Image (tube, rainbow, N blue to C red; front, side):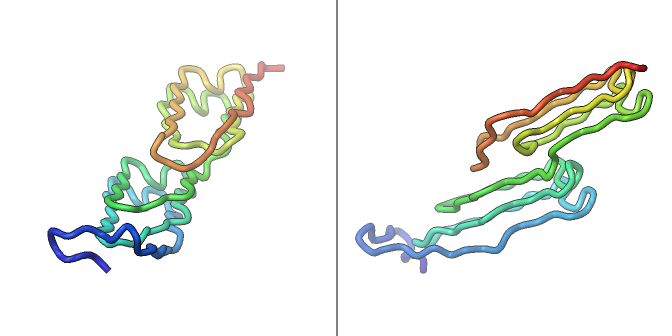
Length: 143
């Protein structure tokens, strides 16, 4: 319950937690350019357990705006690897992956599979995800 206009929450009164369910985007461009705002003007915390973009193309240019006491516990991009297995498959590709999973792997299986690839790993500091390593970037050569 929000306090009346001009008043503040009583700091001596314990606050409750309001838990929302996970927010999940399963399709290609399912949240493209969306602006998702959660306003909490009440005295309770709002907890979001996770936001998940299953594919790296599920949430392009999506903005998440949290106002007030809103806690996001985990953000998952769903991307743990990028594999380019045929000639020029990722050639001259510009690809941004936001918050790739811990242990991310890039594999370029042929000499020219990733020729001209511009890969951007964009780690957003506003997420509560702890990422401590990228597993490897593997560039193979032709046999």
